[in-house]
Structures are given as structure tokens and as C-alpha cells.
Length: 384
Image (cartoon, rainbow, N blue to C red; front, top):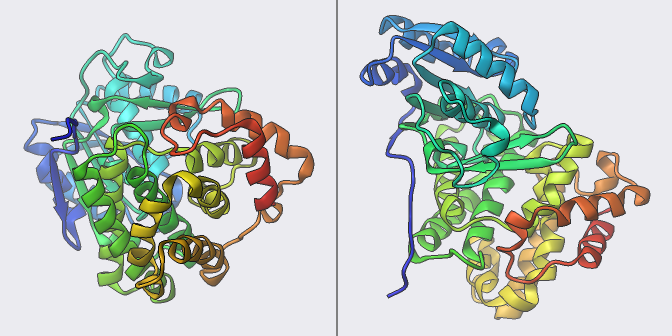
């Protein structure tokens, strides 16, 4: 029997309208005042209303932190921590996208801690505990509600990760109602991000295991079967629920069998060009799959017909190439940009991107095939 370790969020509530119950859940943990972490658009769209009403009904005082931005910068996180500390919060709730959830996790571990954030970057370096924490995603993509990971943009536009079990929340709330108004392009990009999580977990070099494999396959079945419907019929709550569930299962998988080169090459696009994370992944995905083919073809052949039903019964070689072509076609089909040039990248930027990608050693070590600077440069060139 293979030895492995598997950790995930303790409790999950999957139900349309579930955010109304956040108040009673956090009250049950003894909280009196919470930091409510989100962004201005979530508030403006009314997506936080049910959670805020539930908190008020349960007698919980709320301090709203709504200045979260994509690719959360370290200084923004530290400002939020200072705010939450001065307000005397004893719990953290977040309704939002991956950036809000990642910020909330770090607030929960940094409030009351004398450990500086720079000492937390890396794996397993958070020393203390955290405040009670409930996370409700508004996109079906990051899986942040079930991962012990927060990604931070440091002052140099470089992305660093805090990876520690303390970042896993007490509750993950999956409420399809929160994703109903998501535009098709965002639905597509976040959905492909979740697919990347599952694919990279399934081929992860060091910590791939039977539980993460099972979750990754189930995630891809749900995501592959529902992404087109979720994009074209945004009010379909069954499709939206299935996307959220698929995203969460993929999150559980990659939290334990970590992601690799797709993410390593995507991060510099977010850091330098502020390309949304899901779109960054989608732009480089087909070319990284093609590069990995020599070492991961057996696993790709298993996954291809789960994602793309038309590849069932194909030979392993045809299934692998069909998956690459399927992802090349998926972006434009779902209304996304499909080339780096469309997001402001030109040939002169490629060496810088390749150099930054090679700094992502935490991720590259998990790739099924060893990534080199030359290979990264070639992948960016193909994606241009």
C-alpha cells in the first residue's frame, strides 16, 4: 500500500441559499464580531446580502473589509490585518473570489500572531493557530475554500505562497446562488482553472495518491459536462452547482497533490500583466500539456475522455492529442482570449516571463517532466 497524507476542510455545506446560514455557523463557534472580507463588486451586486443578513440575525457584529483586489498585494493584506486587529474581531468570514478567500485566510492566521508574513512564505511555516474561519466562493474555479494555500503578490510583482494546514477553514459554503450572475468569460476562465487543478493533481510527481486521483477524476467529469451550459445558460442552478462542486473536488485534489508547470507559467502573467488567474492558466495550458506528453501520456489518456466525451474509445495517442486540441478550441468557443498577444504580451516580454516562471520552484518540482528556461520560453512563444 502506498503511504500518503491527505488533509482537507473539516465541514462543507453545499446547498442553494446556504450563505444565509453563515451567521448561525460562526455564532456556534463562539464568535461575537467578524471581519467580513470581500470586494466592492460583490457588495454592489448584492452577493453578500444573504450572508450579512444572516450574521445580523445571529447577533454578530461585522467589520467589512471590501478593498480586496485581484492578485492580492502583501501591503493590502497587512492593511486588512491591521484593521481587523484594531476592530477586535474574533472570527473571519469571506464571500468572494479566490483573492478574497486567500486574503481572509491570511487575516485569520495573522491577527493575534507576532509572526511576520515574510516568515510564512513556503510550506508548513505558519507557527500559530487562527481565528474561526468560514469561506464561501463566488466563482467555481480556485477551490480556495478547501486548500491550505494563499497566494500573495509581493512588492516585486512576484507571487509567493503561504502553504499551511492552519489556512484550511472550519466551513466551506457552496451556494450556487452566488455564481448565477457570473459573466460567461469569467465562468469559462475559472472553470478551466479548476480543470487545471484536477489535471495537474492527477499528474503531480511527488504526492499524487489514490484519494486525490479519485477526486480529480470526479471533478473533471463534473466540470467537463457542465462548463458549456454554465457559460451559455448562466441561470441553470444545476450546472452552477455542479461547477462549484467540481471546483471544490479539484481544490481538495491539488491541495494534497500539488500543481505544477501550468501554474508556474501562469503566475508571471498575473504578476506583470494582471491577467486573471484562470485566464492565465487557460492561455498556457495546451502548450504545457503538449510539452509534458512524453512523461504523462498514460495519465492524460485516462483523463481525456472524461473531459471530452468525443475522445472515448480513441487510442492513447489520439486521446492525448485530442485533449490538447480540445483545450485550444475551448477558450474561443467559450468567448475567452486564446493567445498571449490578446492580453498585451509581445515577443520582448517572453524572456522575462520565462525567467520568472523558473523561480516557481515550489510548483515546478511537481511537474511530470523537468521544465527548463528554454522549454518555458518555447511554451510562451507557442502561446503568443
